[in-house]
Every structure is written in structure tokens, then in C-alpha cells.
Image (cartoon, rainbow, N blue to C red; front, side, top):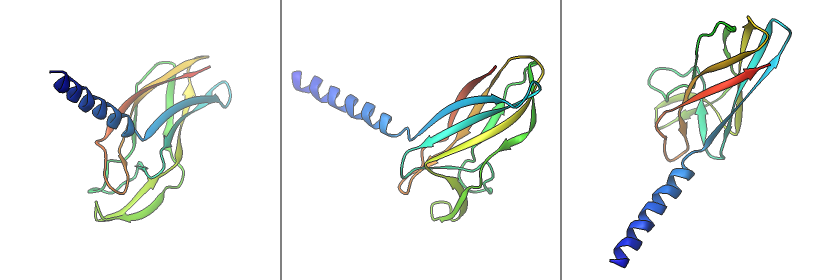
Length: 148
């Protein structure tokens, strides 16, 4: 019985350790007022070495593009679309096509018009992370960014 419990504990520990390893992207957020009427929110992905996330502009049949959905609020409105830096591009055998991606880190930016002195920008982002051996399922993350 003791050996069975030890085996079960070892398997659960290994699964838990593997789940921690397979979280290669950490997100952080910030905001900066440009003036009393405008601000920019920043959504930064810090990506572990060997892993990539993908541009917002990926062709059909490729990996899941990074995307952002903002929750409507009376305190702000969006100005334009989310801006991303120039991505890298390479042919990926997995998808049989050229894909645009980011590694190490990337900062996405969204301009907003302020309709109040302060705002909280909320929403959901979705991304997919891959390395040269595997792709993880797409992941959705809720965010909340205070603009003061």
C-alpha cells in the first residue's frame, strides 16, 4: 500500500512539474497617459528561450494569431487597432507555410481616448506558444489595466 501511494504521489508531482514547465509566456501590463484626453496601454509578453508566440496577422491555416478583445466602458474608447512591432518571419514545417512570430519579448500597444480622469481597461487576450518540438493549445488570459 505504501508503494502504491508513493507511486501515485510521484506521478502527480511529475504532472504538476510538467504543467509548470509548459507555461512559457508571462504577460505584464502598464499604461501611460499621453495627455488628459489620451493614453496608451501596453501588453507585454515575456517569452522563454526557444518558444514563440505569433503575430496578430497570421494567414489562414497557420498557428492561432495573438488577439485582443477589449471590454467596452464609458470611461474610455479605443483609438485604432492594437499596434505590434515588426515580427520575425520563417517557414515552419509544422504549418507548411511562412509564419510571423515573436520570441524573447514583445510589447503590444493600444491607444485609447479617455472619457474620464481615470479608467480601467479590461479585456481578454488569446495567444498560442510553440517551440521546435510542440505547440501548446491556445490560451486565453483576462487582463485589467488601470489608467491614472
